[in-house]
Image (cartoon, rainbow, N blue to C red; front, side, top):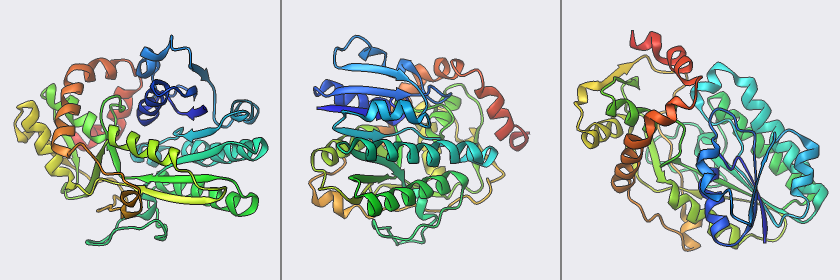
Length: 334
């Protein structure tokens, strides 16, 4: 079986690439290698006979069509994903997350063989009051350029499925964490700064509630979805852990794991439109036999330990990160 995995040098994509290669799939990894991706994430696969890497842009129609041809399955993880950066440069998100998906859909339509699994997010639903959980048919209410770009991509997918009968499964996940995630994200940023004894900039009152899923559990869910794809048409599936925790509590746990004082947590001016609570109804996937295996306490300890060892080196490989951090947090911390 042949799979094209886009964004396979990024956080989630690299874990999925590794899993599919080791399970015998013939995998092509297409990645643009933006700041958030790294060949180091898949370096151990370089000599595997059933793996190849192609550097390229999801918006390159000719290249994408060439790579989709002959694939049994396409998994799309190529995306701009950081909400804070979407507030600084919305156009970049529209290009990759919407135009890139449209390009991919055209390639799948031209090929007529491959099924597509597209990675989306719980953020398309916006903030949900407790105890509401969003089922797969819950209406969209995005509140950031990032979540709007992901919602727009989903609308494009729905339209193409209705018009052309394309076989597409949209997987919406809660917040995923674990090794290899770029240093800009909440847990990697706080873990790395805590280890260094530096202040951790926490937005607002820190009571924003997020649902957390360890990356290995997401990979298992995606493997199950890939093994049980329906006939041509559209479906959406939610992947979540049910473990919803306030940001300030996550920060406190990171301090405990790194043996640093909680006083390093520094409340700063909140970002615009910051959603208060996300929550997914995952009963559909649970009925298929999936359940998360790694509780947040265990997953966070494993993740913090990884960043304690690798975080500073990873930060050093992105020369633009220091400038981004200053732009995003400098005034807030001063």
